[in-house]
Length: 423
Image (cartoon, rainbow, N blue to C red; front, top):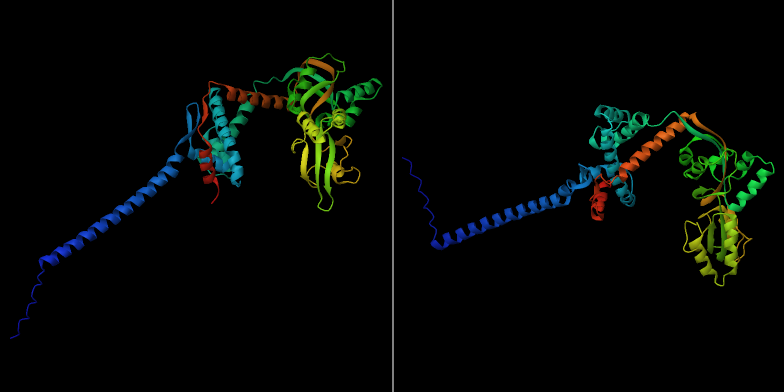
């Protein structure tokens, strides 16, 4: 008969041992609980940080156009599209332009809808497919305004522009000064041809290429072509067959300028120079300014004053260029500053430069014929439709009854730029 295995006596814990064990268990529970709380707090903090730093800003309304609101997420998407491949500095420069595009596009959409012009999603999606672009909201909102503008022009404004109207047959050339204009008038009086003189002397490409004969034109087309309304305004109020006096145009851009240069320092080895320099609108003006400079007691101060009053040089500090090198400006400038003919300290004669653009000039104009109801050329009519559309959009933007607001401050723009940059 097998012996029974002796039972191991039960371990008895003393009161002190039980107390110590319970304390250890309590400490473990506390440590575990604290650890859970810390982890939970970390998760909460990360979540709050994400919510406050990313989620909430993305869903904040930043642009409003009447009853339509756009959040930061929408604005960010559009900034990424328009600024694709751009640096942070260029993106920052685009921030306001993207706001303007969003606002204008929505104003146009709302106004077009009121006159019955809309573009369906199917048409937009077909255009996206044609361009191999994704079928997403941001690309739809990119393409829809383009299609809407085209439809407005070809349908709505097609009805606004007549097929015939008042026109003038206009001759015109742009000259640099009043004196030159009077000289040209004298040459015309002596039998020289307007077309020959315009081809030789006119200082804007359109009238020069046309040899002064601008042809039959309706009102406003010349304003579009020349970027100035002066010729238009004169031609449609002038008598037929009368050559104008010099007609001044302060805003026209012409393809000529005149340098006045005084080299103060020249280092031929380093190819570096310090110069006083002015760009004047005409030879007449340049000669008048040069006379004032020669009479001045203090050259630097006189150049600074003349620069403030007359110069059209796009760079420089009060007529003084502290350090210039060849190739920074124009060939005429380089030849004067770094060539052997102009001595240091000597004021140059007026130097004509056809690579410089200046504003202000004088028109010589003659209306050859007029017709109160002449058919419009198709190209002229298209320009008038485009102008009518542009005027309509400008009126929308100027309409104070429209609520157009942006809530983007510099901090929010920087936030958007940081997230628009590629990783």
